[in-house]
Length: 511
Ligand SMILES: *[C@@H]1O[C@H](CO)[C@@H](O)[C@H](O)[C@H]1NC(C)=O
Ligand SMILES: *[C@@H]1O[C@H](CO)[C@@H](O)[C@H](O)[C@H]1NC(C)=O
Image 1 (cartoon, rainbow, N blue to C red):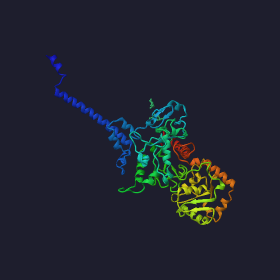
Image 2: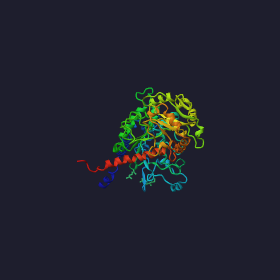
Image 3: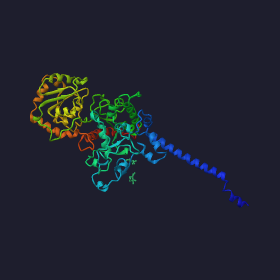
Image 4: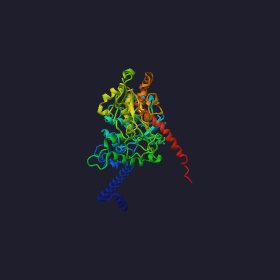
């Protein structure tokens, strides 16, 4: 009887079994929910901007944390790996070399083995190891109409023609951040891809932050200024300001920023008015600028920052179709606004000194008003092109003159020139102090005194250096993209010296 009872006990009545099953089910569900919540909170910590993105004024369908969460249910590994920043794209260190870039871009293609044999550009061979923050699309390609799709935090750059296009016209002058971003994205492509076939190995993207020697902040600050400065209906703060404020918040929370106080970070506010609200807070970083005209010396200076050229508006002359000395009947060419504030007074003076000279072209109006074609014709039929300080020390005009092989005459005492540690501008430019230029007869006497031979030497040199001022994708050896990366690499040496010195005593807390 006892035996029978014992045998009976392990089998509870059916209703109790149902209760047990229910309890187990509840426990498993709760555990799953807890795991999901944990993952979620981690990601929110890693992506502080997500809140901003969700309440953002613009309802662009670009990346929002909310959207992705809806598309990918809880715990979906595809979603977690798609979240920017939460998980590095790939962090794969193999035998001292880093596999770069987005795994999606590393699909095996035909001839992989052959490519492995060709020269690799990796963290070991590049001068600059660049870690790029996966900022939400609103900060970069989202402004060009690109939308984040699924896992991809960045556009596919394998096909140069398919990459998002920057808006044309005068916007292009300050498109430096765009070209740098495209180039660094392409550094993660396998070596056989068309766009990287001739890509020089100056900068390479690393996805492991501890391997980086520079942290690139891919904010298209100039375009944000061009496009989003004006208040739109219903906005109390312009989008340009909102983006800057969010960028500051984003960076201040980053461990990498805090560890080095932002010193090894790279930001590209090339337009003189861009990043106006955030520049002071982010001033520890290295900036890529057009000049220092609108910066106070403690925010930007040549010790820490890099000057990059404007993207020229005029078409470059080919080597073969560049008019020579005799084919350029105009002695000196200037086109621009005559009346300028601040440093631009010399323009007005020169206008009065030169306006009646027969072989001098000195006119009002911007390139836009007068047409690109006329400006091209003017510069390419002039021996000298005047670059006179306006309301900023630099202008696009210098680079239009260079690609027109019109010897620049620089009358701007405070101008900073791109890559001047690599290029001796006196070989292809004439520099005149503002005070001298304002003297009656001085400028014309100087220019007329330059012989055909001397001019031709400068013209030959111009033709040689023009490619240093080309922004393009894919980038080529020695172009403006590569020159800028090299300049950053050189400047980073001194930043690193500072950082290493500062680290000397990190083991000993001061007594
Ligand atoms: C990143 O690089 C460091 C230094 O080489 C290494 O110790 C670390 O494991 C790497 N991290 C990842 C996620 O691969
Ligand atoms: C690197 O990637 C390869 C293949 O994708 C993998 O087998 C290996 O375990 C990875 N190594 C590390 C350190 O993540």
